Image (tube, rainbow, N blue to C red; front, side, top):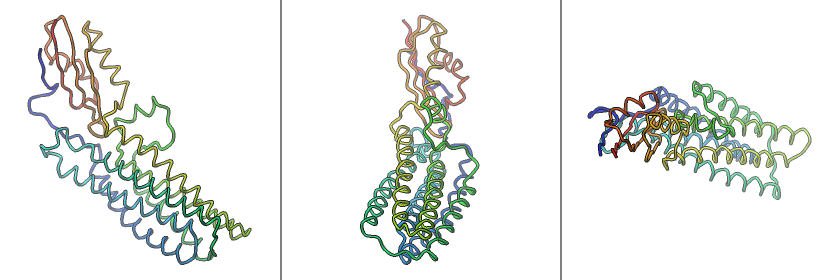
Length: 308
């Protein structure tokens, strides 16, 4: 039996995503902007009696915290990229930060939903003249944050499984978590403005807590998607079945048998693989390494060959 890494004896374990340092700077910049707006919205909502505005401010705080997690994850993974204690590099720090951010989102969604429902039964006076401008300012901040963070392509909806898996290996879930927070905040801000405006025009005070409930549902939905995707990566679920199918086809097309195969994500755009081959031919692990070189996303491959 022959076993060797499908790379040179001394090889890199740098599995950071493309544009890592640029995304890090974007995250720190938006943290400052969102932190200031968070304080304005929460204080304004408490003073002027709008639970939806408080909900928007609370969610603003969660995405400010998520951006802080994202920025720290970028910084830490970059500074420790050559630390030998991390067997497969630091590429998964962003996924860990995204998972943590999603947990916080889920808890905040529950708190907002509870408070909004309670306001249906115990409504409070709302100072519309002050609350609506603050909500509009919150929406402006969210749109500005989205503009500052723009530059990548992130899918937030319910993709089909095949499309979702094809993008799973390349997606930077650290930046995706930041973009999700901003997008959800923009949606909640819009709902706040609509709810307050209708309540002011028609006296429908129930529109304000209803906007809070809808906003909580939006937050919960984004949280679920982020938990699902980052959790799968942290548990080393196969991120791209097309790559696995391609590896199997490439090896078995040579008349060999693929005895075992493991493919997992090491970082944005980087996959690791362990390939076990049973063959009747005198073929070295290097032969299979060259055979799999066509898969650009395979950054770290270990090949085991058993001759029979």
